[in-house]
Length: 529
Image (tube, rainbow, N blue to C red):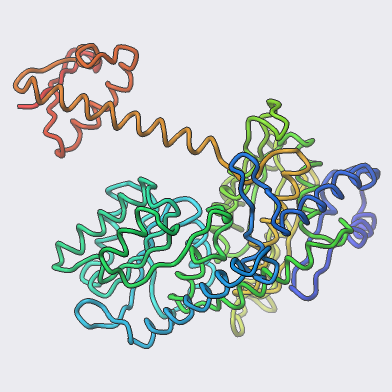
């Protein structure tokens, strides 16, 4: 197309939402002229399914659960009074608790004000709070924030080292719906050890966000933690940012949680429109379907041209891939659905992988995020009439054009600014798009059986390690190869796992396992003296 034809296509397909300050441009995606007519019945079915979900229907049949994250920003939609009151009361408690912390009515064990925050979670219990913290942080935040978002000992040591003596003024928020998630439990125990080493008690500095009656809930109650906030089974981890999971850390940092909720609520209203051309979430879902031929044939590359949105691609990885990456559809048919998501930020992307995007394999489409407001206040001129923000905009538009010229499709989301309301709106936009797309490809977007399979496999490795250490302890003073140990514990079918467990154990002083080198790595022997 020539430039005038592109301009007319842009005018035709640009979706403008003035109430949100958000525009969605699909004009540079490669869909046919008949696409919207062909998709009319499928997208209308997606609208009907979403209506049923919001009214409280069982939208997650595999776990027989309702899906209610839309109620979080509009409790009046909740299907009964008890749920509505639970949401409203939790939000009131979050605001009051944060105010008590900021005003120093609630203090540390040693009587000082809380100034720092350590959030312990995994997956949705960390990715959402991390994204929001990076997007909205400012020098005058009420509290600084750190994260334990893995069970990596070195990672936790680094975080604790950065806190140093400030641990005494740090509140720890432990987030786990079941209370049994191993990564989160491990982080909690590591934090407990650090507090004890400093002569402090975890409970005097800790808050739990968890399911009522969970192991974590009972522990927090028995140890008189500072507070407990609920996680409900009708809110999945990857859609939990606007529950206590995300609102509590955001409120403690001093962010405008009412703005986040308002932005999400307004986006929900916009994305309930039954005309797909005027519904930004429907447009995204339909473009995903078109690009990947309804089977995830192309990856989605997220390129926000704003440092504050750098972590958005990580947040969307879980939201999109955990929701849509399914072996079977709702009819039990093997489909292997999903959309792979990755991303960087502009204009770093131009010095990283845009070369491949433009000239390599065409197995992706891009979602650009353009932010119109550069910064608070004026920018200096780097050269006459040109600021650094002008360059950033130029690089975005240049990359978009360069990709289009080589037949690479792209969507552009344009937002006026990055603030709490915009962040809430972006979260709600992609949540709804994922829900619509799940219906279009007939998968359950609200469960994650593959994650549970990984957890079970990990538990098997730990069980095998305990047997290995027991065998070595019973044969103290002797050394054995991995194969001999596997036979000795009747795990002959798991020699490779035994091999890896032994090498990990020998690399660390925790269990007293010593490695004696053999002629090859496979002839190494292991023992406990």
